[in-house]
Image (cartoon, rainbow, N blue to C red):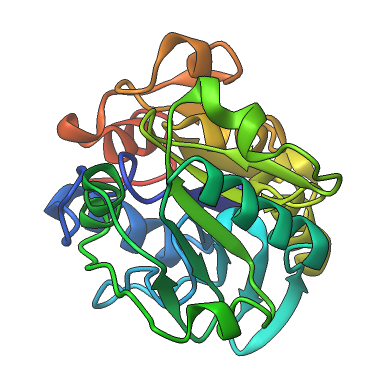
Length: 258
């Protein structure tokens, strides 16, 4: 029996670049809650930029790709980037002439911009904020760094680091997070908090950063708009976000009714 459901946001609950849930997706979430299923948002977005949907209260928020997890007002897991790794990455990106954004539960700022980084933030309906105090604020606890890049640049970005990894949901940008984080570990922390088993959990996702989440639950559902490499790690697939895949799957499998 499914007792808890985890949802990626962009490309899963929301069509890319959209702010509002479709009527059918909203119905699916509302019905799941009415049926006693706990709802969890698992997103690469930061705590400040995680969307809030009218009428839907998520039981847990897994933000920064799992680096910062809250249940209500309680922080059940947090893991900032390693200080030395953080400074090394800044140096690496400077040598690559790449701007970088940093984020925690209080701010999202950047030391510059470029077209891909701007587009990355537009997907989440955000505007880049260049902060003159970036060099000082980077010494605070940072849960995620974000930069525009291609996959072949990952090794160069992480050169000289030991506790950091890259996860991505778009092929023109990267999220940089602690090695021990990721959506999979965050899901396990939430399951432990609520006392649920893996088999009692379901997850929906479409990006490469969702793979470990899909594998951390008993039923991992890849969206129809996910790439084949992602679908290969899922238990099953559903229709695309454009076709209200979450709603269709939940209805077809008896998790909700019309």
